[in-house]
Amino acid sequence: LNYGESEEFNAAAAPMHQIIQPEVFQGVRFLEEKSLPNRLALSESEKILLRTSSKELLMRSSVKNNRKKTVRPLLRYSSASKNDNLEYDLQPPAPPSDDGHVFSGTQEPKSPYIPSQRLVHFDLKGAPPSLPFFLQVLQLSKDLGATGILLEYEDMFPFTGRLSPASASNHYTREDLRAILSTCSALGLSVIPLIQTFGHMEFILKLEDFAYLRDVPDMPESICPCHPDTLGLLSEIVDQVAGFHKEYDPGFQYIHIGCDEVYHLGECSECKDRRRNDILRVTKYGAMPIIWDDMLRNFMAEEMQPLAGVVEPMVWVYAEDIYRFVPTYTWDKLAEVFETAWTASAFKGAHGSTLIVPNVKRHLENNLNWLDLMRNEEPKFKKGLRGIVITGWQRYDHFAVLCELLPGAIPSLAVDLLATSHGYFNKSITSRLYKSLQCTDSPVAQRRGSNELSLESDPFLFSQLSWCFFTGSSFFKTLQNLLSTKTDVADFIKKVKKDHAWTTDFALLYYGITGLIKSAKYALTDLFDIYTQSEWIEQNIYPLVLQMKDLKKEVADLRKRRVWEHRPLPPLPALQTEFGIGQSTTTAATKDSDLSSLVTGRPKRL
Image (cartoon, rainbow, N blue to C red; front, top):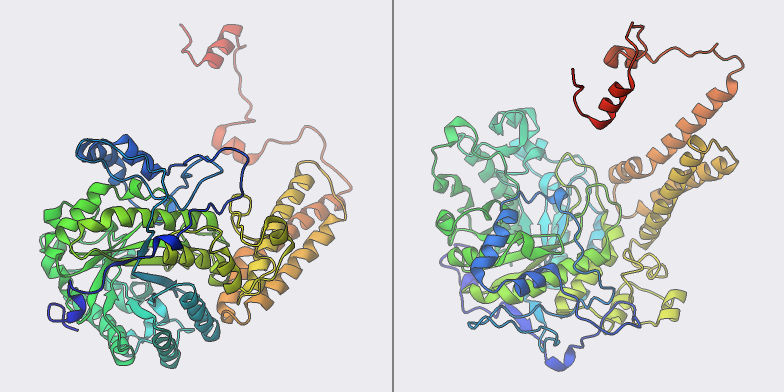
């Protein structure tokens, strides 16, 4: 496609979001009912709107936070409300009117906001799902309301020629990718490939053959945009991926070229005087390029102007309080430059690089708050907002460890897709969740009622989905056992080391861990290749084995001793060397006043 001549980018296209009939929406809370009176619980973004009587005041109060680096691992949880009766399906109050009046926002919206495009992000970095499992997830995503996928390849694409070393040994074959694209086409799912350019290029810049292209020699994250070989390399990467999609995907329309967290771009001496337009030549390809927005947030509108009509930004925030990271004036700047934009929430991989299961409650709040924000900010853009991508990161970067695996995040994905495709989430659609995840009538559901879902008491949905049999459910249940076992191991080690206890619990706990390894291997067999299986078990379960073995050895060594040293025990050598503790010195007697001086921290009066 040639942007500027293609009808796909015409402003007269279908509306950017759908409005369902008012009678379909029911403002019902999905949390457990409380005996307390119903009260409106405001999110932080809503509180900002209520506190702020003008855009100028909002800009002054938020500018400090907006200039902080938005690094994914540093996003901290700040609950939207301490109210247990939080109603997730309420929209925020309308912005202040001309006379400064702010409406109460206590009434339910008559027409929930539904993004026209709802894409699921599949991050393939070093953990490609098995093809049968992937195809089943695509079908499930479609059933739950997805309209497309964002496919991040990195080292899982079958590169050829001089790029072939950049492909991992367990990469997808071209036949695998054809099966994925044909399945998406049959399901009516659009496919946007994500190709890293400039930033997060560790997968190729880590190699000796391409190390000379690093923007900073000892940092393989970013490529030097001004090196004469850079444009050729990026063009070859994009050509191979885009060429494949053009050949096998008739609906190929967009390319996501990454560009998030590019903290070291343009730091070499040759790059400092180059114009931005020269760097952006890589985006001149057939389909419309999409970029992450975080490196644009501190730019003024005139600084972003060279990007107008060249790319479409995708604004990502994975915290619950979205307006804290992208205040309303950020959207004003974006709308001044770009005719449209995308948004990005998350269903996993956003709240900790070593987590093993996503917190469904937190991700649902993030997605519902995005719908609130999109309703508020969409009118600012000439072509509205394209849609939302629900991201599912597998690693925070190429060298990072695995975070939540896809099968353990299926419940979170299902809840978020239902929420974004309905514009809300309450018990009126819980039955569809249970049906999609192949749930039988569990004792928990029978006690609470089949249409009620509690995320306050069960944020991971372990209890409520324990009787479900979706693909990957056996691994999901293994995660619950793992979390419980980790707690048991920590308690046991504390009992042995701090309380000096030793019981037969060791054998039971140790063999429970080895059984957990076997259970995880069985659950992962049909979902991932042997490399991902091994890495995940090594990262999450095997350390428990080592802890127990080390503890057993320590106790065994103590039991072997029959003779002990004569008192006093010698000072620890490290304390002697580093702090002089235990060294024989001649000192004067310490007076009481000296001790008092040391305690209070005041200098001794001479």
